[in-house]
Every structure is written in structure tokens, then in C-alpha cells.
Image (cartoon, rainbow, N blue to C red; front, side, top):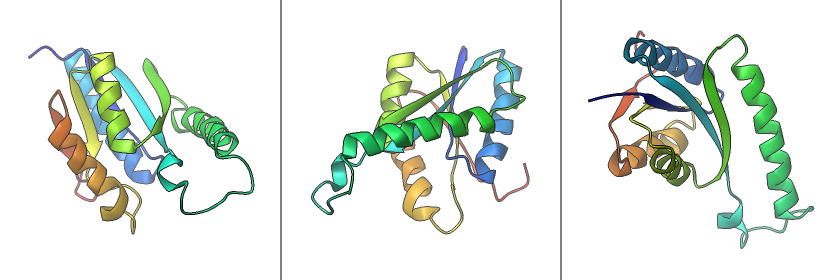
Length: 145
């Protein structure tokens, strides 16, 4: 198997830093390009539940801008990384980006933010593993890395 592109989905948590470090190690061993993505959860799914004070599109736009700034500070000091902020269902966008960009491997954590881990990131990892067109390396950030 020839691994040239490695995708790392992040949520900017401390755990994401550990996963990024592990992914950097693997991509270095494979001499692969590291791609980092953050997905802004689309509010389309929730439009029937509440009426926001500002238009949803404007709110999403601001969320994307904030995420892009956060990505910059998250990756300070990192070299040769391609970063992208996506909008939509988190698992679906990771899969779509993987397919469209021809990723060879996904490295992701089994847990995101503590407390929300099973509700949010754990279920995302599960969906990605089930639907990914390429191998997925999952890492439990609570184990020694």
C-alpha cells in the first residue's frame, strides 16, 4: 500500500494535538503529505428547532472564519501541512473530503472533548470507520502515545 496523503480530522481539543502528533509520525514514516480538516457542523439539520437572531448562513460564515483562525493557531510551528475548514455533517464531510482528495489513510481519535466524547467524536469516528474508502487508524488519546 502506497500512502502519500494522510487526513487528520481535528476538533482543536488537547486530544487533537496528540492525534496530530501521532499522524505526523506516521506521515513522516511514509513520506506522505499531512492534511488537517476541521468540520463546522452545519445548522441545516437544526433549522426546525430554533429561530436564530441572525440568519443561519451568516452565523455559519462567522463560524467558518473563527474555525480558520483557530486552525492557524492550532497549527503554529507545524510545517508542510495542508489545512481546510469544511461545513456540514462532520462524518459525512470527512468521508466526502477523503474521496474527493484521494486520501490514502485517515488518522483520527476515538474521543474528542472529554464529556462529549461518545456523543460527538466517538460516534463520528465510528461512522468514518464504517464508510471510509481508505484505511482508518483510530487512536485512543487517553492511552499513552
